[in-house]
Length: 331
Image (tube, rainbow, N blue to C red; front, top):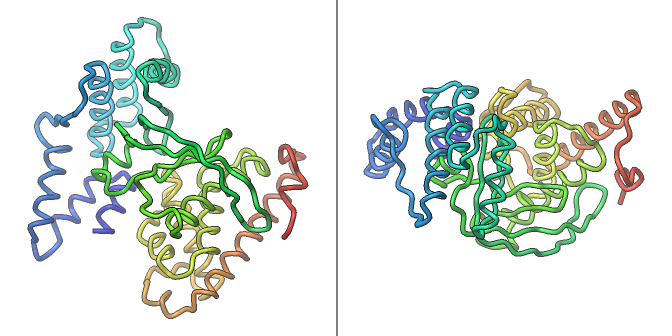
């Protein structure tokens, strides 16, 4: 099912359903998953059960569910769906002012805070969130990333009501593990069974810590550029081919989807460096390559990218942000 969920993560529910329909033999699990998706996304009037007592919260969740259903099946254009979402949310706020969607979500965040919840709006490209959760605890970690170590504060989130379009598109079989903001890292605790495993220590902690470092060292990077560098860090520190396999499954040559696009560029560049090929998509070929060679190549690509960003910053005479020296310190 990895390929099916990869298509969902690329925001292409129609292709994902076509793929699911093509799988043979038809197991009971596949039949059940297909029925779940039909009921959530393709029924005459899709309605998602919402287990929440607060009627206002239920209606906010229903508004986002309707938005997700429209954009993920391409039944609605993204711009039109966002306008409809904004109108529905403004009605719940009981305001007549022509708020932008960002202003509307700021108002929602204030009300959710009063109700004892945390709310994060905005866009997880190319679609809007939101993320709504109940509990949050903070823990500090010292994290080694290429050529430096940094101390980060991680806000450990749990008890989610909504996990963005990614969670909705996959029935939470794939969820956002967390994100980086200027006040620290945010971690979706249920995504990690053991905080000592690479899933957390590398795929989350080092990945997101690299984002924090890049925010300071190279402000203004696009989401795809940030993801490319953080994914290279994952390859540098992991111990086997599993992460590379994940990137292969997720890769898509589409700049509108920063995570899949970063995976595509990473595979393209590491294929050129190790195999002297434009793009190697066969995992069996990669399994024949000693993983240490892949890790070393990832570090080379990371350093080459860092050098290119430094040159670009000098050419544009753009400051790299506070603490320039710390951005280039080598271990």
